[in-house]
Image (tube, rainbow, N blue to C red; front, top):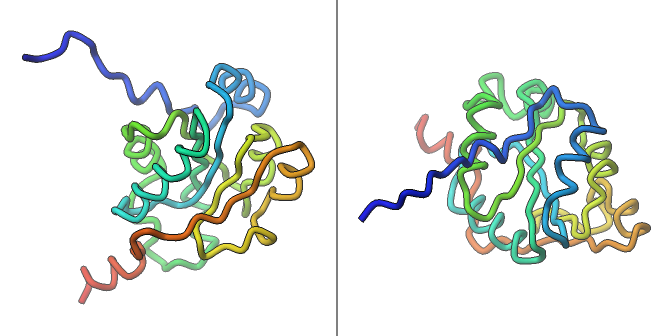
Length: 166
């Protein structure tokens, strides 16, 4: 029997044009503790989904920072990257139950976004050493924790694209 409750997952997407002050106000309503992670999330796969669930389980809310299209291009992932537009990547992430808010950043790193949100938990995947996680010092100095989560499923968008193209 269908539910009368309508889903509005796109309300989780923070307008990329929102300034930092408005972003902080919007995110202030999230349940604490807040977890933050970031990435390109170009072609969402099982590794991403599992990682995001693991991150969310560290707190009560998960905020995902997403590299803008230009930011992805500057990472030298390939001339045709990202495959999916920023709007599409943010929309797909917002549809995940474990994600509470999605916001983009255009800089090389999400440091300004991390400073604005100042999460209780800052998380990256197991390929990052805790000492190398951007914003880790700031979060730790504010009493937060920094985590490098071991990959449960070894997946990569780059290798997935190589397989598709092969």
